[in-house]
Amino acid sequence: MSIKEKISEQFDTLTQEEHLNEIVLFNDDVNTFDHVIESLVAICNHSHEQAEQCALLVHYKGKCTVKTGSYDELEPLCSRLLEVGLSAEIV
Image 1 (cartoon, rainbow, N blue to C red):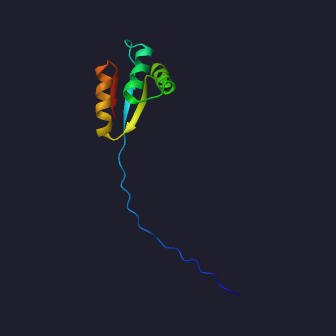
Image 2: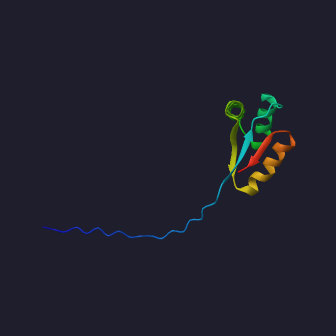
Image 3: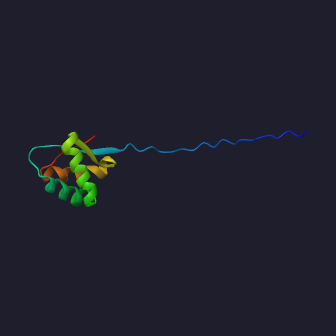
């Protein structure tokens, strides 16, 4: 009879967790679907289909996360969305 020993090695790994923020776009009664879609394509680099889906979610749900990343990456994008008249914030 043989005894098999299992040796498990434990490795300590250090991982740096980066807190990701989100740009949330809010519904309003001012902007058209076309303006929202064009803005998301131009500013957030969305595909037309992705921007259209976000616009529909904002319209029916009241808000939608349109971009995720670090605060430093999102701040200029959110500022541009605000400049073109959209309601957005970083959370």
